[in-house]
Length: 312
Image (cartoon, rainbow, N blue to C red; front, side, top):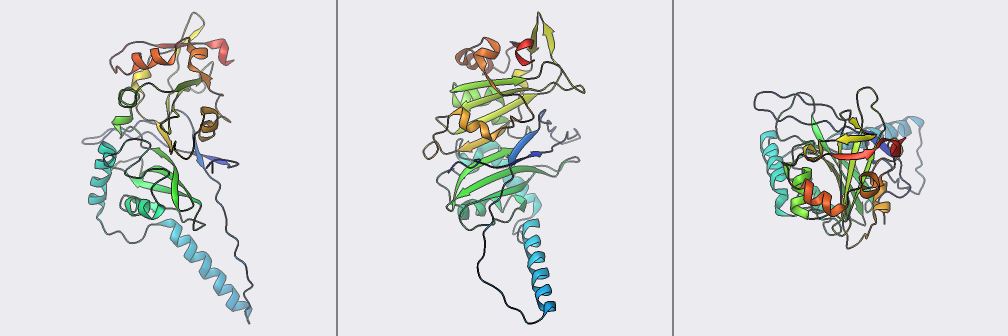
C-alpha cells in the first residue's frame, strides 16, 4: 500500500539554532516541509450499557485522559538522557551500520514495528499512539545529540503496514553529515533522476531553491534546499551554494515492495505551496551525470543557473 494515498499533509515548523560553546550549529530548512497527517481510526462495535449518567461520564473522562496520556510521552525510560543522547550521536554518525533506505537499523519492508519500537523508545521523548494494531503512522520527537537552546528534538515519522515498517520520513537538521549532498552522491552514486524548483524572485528576503535527488532503485528521495536570494545573470537565476546543502529531508521506502517512480514518490514532498519540480536538464541544461560528477566534489565552485522566466 502506498503510504501517502489520499492523505492530508501538514507543515513541520523548524527554527535556527544558535551556535554556542561546544554546540553544533543546526541549519534551518529554507522551505516548509510536509509530513503525513491522516490517521486511520478503528471503529469499535458493540454497545455499552450503563445504569447511571454519572458512570458514563466517568468512563468517557477516564478513557480520554488515558488516551491523551499515552500520546504525550513514552513509557518510563530505562536510560538516562545522557545515555540516550550518546546512542543518537552514534546513530547519526554510523546509521547502525546499515545503508539507506535502512535507517538506524530499521529497514522498510522488513523490520516489524515491534522491533523498530524497541530501538526508537531508547532515543525518543515522544511517540504518538497508534490508532490501529496493524496499519498506522507514528510520529516521534527524537532527542538531539547535544543540548540546544532553540530546539528540543528532531522529527521522524514511520508508516506501518500490516505490522511492518514500510515508509520512513526523517529530518535531522545538519547533524547527519553523511547525508550532506556531496557525501550522499559519493556514497550512493549517480542518482536516477534529479528535479529542481524555485521561485522567480525573493519574498521577505527568502528565495527557495530546492533539489530533489531521487534514487528510485534504492528507495531514497532526498530533498535539499537553500533560501538565500539568488543573483540574476543574463536572465538566469544563479545558485552557488549547491555543495553547502547539508540538511536534507529523507524519504525512505523498500524498492522491493514499492517500485515507485518519481511522480509517485513526489507525494512525499510539498507541491501545493511550492512550485512543481522540473527535470534537471529542463531547468538548468545540465544532465544528471554531469551534476553527479560536479557536485560530489565538495570543493567545486560551479554554480547552477536556471532561466528566471521558466518559473514565472
